[in-house]
Length: 435
Ligand code: HAM
Image (cartoon, rainbow, N blue to C red; front, side, top):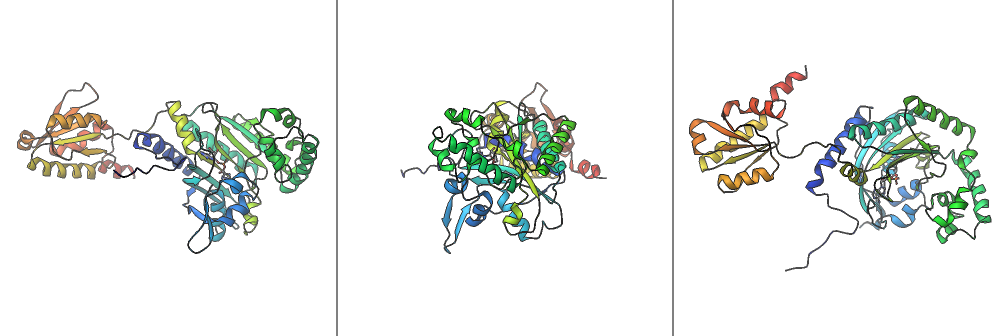
């Protein structure tokens, strides 16, 4: 036997047993975003490396150590996308979607970061993200946050905490950065190697350090919120007022600085206490300078991305209700003649009931074995078609999950009977509902 090839560390197979969670999350997200006027966009997985350097920032962990970067066969440096915002902005500029107009976009797909894998942190992971362009008021910030809260509600996810901060404008942040360098330089004996390295490149990230020995010195550091420019301070307090009016709870966290350089003003994260160290399930913020940094005309932007693996883990842990993906019906048959009829019946039922999930038995085997498979498939009913039923032009319908009695039904009345039992819209009904 040849040696088996295994998946790459940190890159997971998402197996069918997880399907119901993934699909429920993806569907509720799409419905929720649509209900706020967001349109889907699909973006390439590979982009020029330069795009990520100029947006996420040269001295961030992502660009310094986590990107999957390689030369393609033409000699160009390209990278697997570590996140979706840079690509969305690039596409927006390239296709003229941003200038003088409002765009509300959402996307979903795999992202890649060469991080140290652990629970909730992977090298290939999935995000569902949204970006709103062309709106600079705090009302959009509030709406976006309310939209995320609505999604948690629709999913039945409980116990998330919203953390908020404002990073001010780039200029205000530059001044604050100098203050922070002065402060941490005066305490440099307490700093760990990582923080010392960041002191002159990205001192704000020191605030984010989890090193317990540095906690006291970090707590004593000047707060960014005390150094906001007046417009950013007004923007932030209006956002808070809107969230208060909407009755949404939040915590202001002056140490929330985010790991990507493109943010200005509002930043936020939704945190769970149920998953351990990787506790952010959704993060985002405003990036009013990013479009110009990438060569477009000044256009404000704000967005967030959710970590799908983390949300799925939370949905499982909290046992939230998910869409059923098991088959409704397993169609068992016996004999050559019955096989052809069963296939024709199955196709007709799929014509009439577009929402029907039906497994037709394939391969041989007697009814006993077929019914065992029907049971294992999770189906609610078995339909049985053997020589006797061929004669009577009927099928047996055997409930697999309830105590309903077994019944017999004529072929041409199967569709309305199943529609009623399964609560499905038949094709005719579906068509009339549109009017
Ligand atoms: P981010 O905080 O880097 O932001 O990632 C967003 C979310 O993706 C995180 O909150 C987390 O749930 C998930 N995530 C990140 N890294 C991993 C990983 N290695 N494994 C599993 N899940 C992970 C962004 O990516 C920004 N583009 C968000 C944004 C959109 N800001 C504005 N618009």
